Image (cartoon, rainbow, N blue to C red; front, side, top):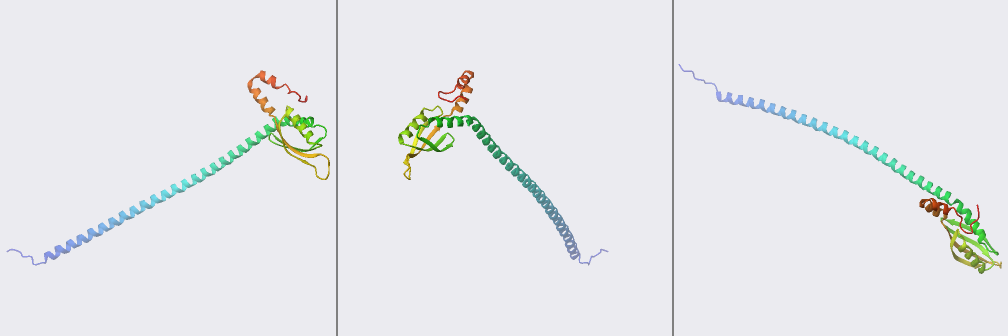
Length: 207
């Protein structure tokens, strides 16, 4: 005798499929959640590593900036020291010249003329004094022009002294001849030139 299934098999099949779909959906959700958490953890780890790299780079950049600042300070200090050394060497070379310049000024003064101020800036001299007449100032300028240590006298001012005193106040400029520089050039030229440079110029005082 044939068996007849009177149970609602379609409803059971539908319920089984719904149950399987629910299980599959739950598994997919869990898998998606796991993937999301893993990706989030990976991104967070990458961000942390990048932050560490950035902090390291900032520290290295700050250290390089500090070293660059120190190098610039040392370079500036070096330039100042070189400038001071150059000034000292120039003063040492010009020390004998200053003695000759003042000696020549004393020799160039004619009678009736005396100096009140002598200032020197580099090779330029500013000479102030009092003379009995403008003719004696002209004589002083000629003597300066003939001096082996001075040249280019230029008269700036001559005015009669106030208060009824005799004479006139004058201001003139002169240029110091660069004898030390000529000696250096002659040293580079050779021994013969050095022997020639040791000869005193005409009219120069004997040391």
